[in-house]
Image (cartoon, one colour):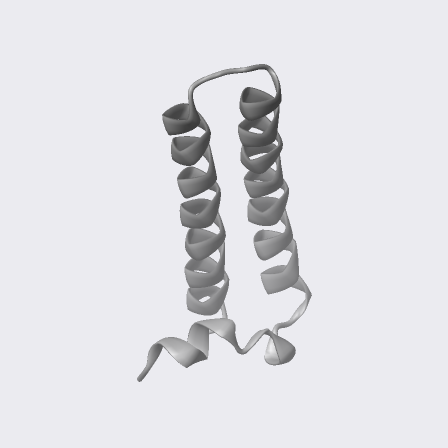
Length: 72
């Protein structure tokens, strides 16, 4: 089992898409916060932390959606 299985979203069913979509929305909000932090003259470290959290949320969404698909 490699990491590529988590990016194979073509075989998701609708519940997996709902879970991943929810995580993607939250990640988008973190990214919007990072851009807003930079535009308002905030610390680049804070914006970097928010962008890192967005990537972690997307990764969590991919992992949870993949685990939901394991119905054996």
